[in-house]
Length: 455
Image (cartoon, rainbow, N blue to C red; front, top):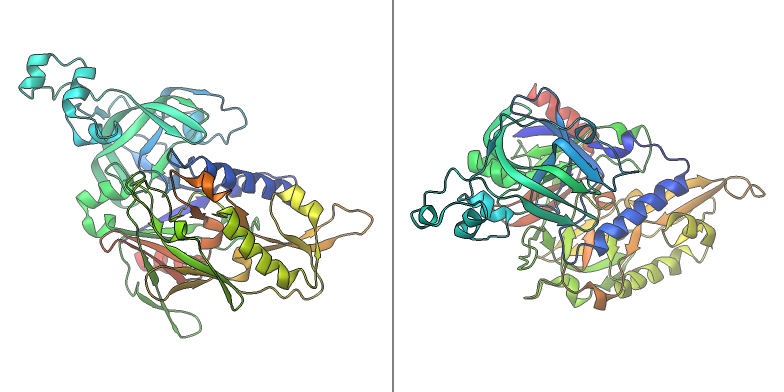
């Protein structure tokens, strides 16, 4: 087992108001979801991890992203186009110099993977290997050509290199990564944890299958509180003792609830699962067919995503869930339409002294795979003082979002399970058994316990 800290980017961010914070976060979730249909997700920008490369003294900090299958970062000299106003991580202001790293050959499987499975003959021809050498398979000394990689809201051109990678106490030799000298609106690199040959877990699995074939994270519940958001969230590579059943403070045992991964022919790097419904209180709203399975075109299913903040649902299903929620909460609490405009979230309410909010349960495919969300994972409460005539008022907003019309969601997943709804759960990606699991945890305590056991 290897334990690494994930750091929330909000721990360094500054926001003027709660409205500004929520508006920014909801807009980013919507943009990432709506642009995922034909491209990898826009890089997840909530959680980062750091490692050391080769002889670099300075750690490299990247976004940890289960929606991407490539590890890349800016390299010197680095030019970023349209990067004004983007978070400027240390790599972008002082990108590493990789003069000692080894360029990947045009004949390698890694080169083919970076070029959408193009043949080595084509790639070696692009690398200007002579024809007679291509025919006799003697192009090993020719470098893999630069490749273009596009996200929903940016892109980059990179070359593949190999070097040693230090993750905590583990050293990975011949680790393959993308080195970008030019990027459009992408000043920070990404550690891709998706399903793909070049992802970090896949490369780790070739060295240590027990570490690479299973990983999990446990995101500390923060509710945007500045103190809690600074606490590290554990990223666990491999299996730790008593993983399936862990004693918790109440003396009981916690078990994982598993749901099978679905294969997606168009987006093979996504972790996609089936959602059969969402319960609001005792009433279950059945999910549309597109969220239950993936068709041959790659449409449908739900992406379990570390890089999107809020859960996105197709419009019809979202409206049904909201209507049921509103019929209970809206009966006794006034709708806060102005707050909805300012935050990008809905419905929002001015709350009475004791606000009763129905329990929300996610019902996944694969037997009795239900996950009961804690109230703070789907209903955000804060004090609003924007109306000076009425003083500060307590407000609550539902933290699920409208992903748009079902008919426009063709070409990709139908919904995204965001990291805000994953807080306080250990989410395990079991690549051997091809399943995703959820177990309720106190993540800050889990970090402390695993750190203590490690030392």
